[in-house]
Amino acid sequence: MATFSSGLPYDYAEYPDVKAYVAAYATTARAQRMNLTMHQAAAEVVFGAQPGGTLPVTIAGHHPYGHGLRHPAR
Image (tube, rainbow, N blue to C red; front, side, top):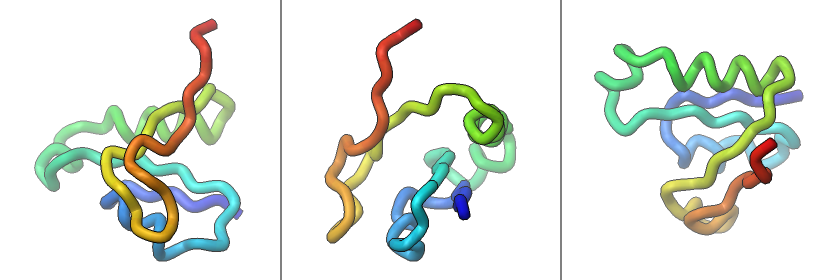
């Protein structure tokens, strides 16, 4: 099972047993409503695009600031 979150990075802590977690979020609620780019990027990852990104915050007990995926450019 995979989980997708478009809320806050902290949402991850609510699903500690999920093996695949796709997070896409904006800095404000208005940005979330107005900008579909984050949802498009998440959908592309689900369908095979190479994921990447890092956490902008620490999720206590789970991951530090900067944790995430980094891949060399193709």
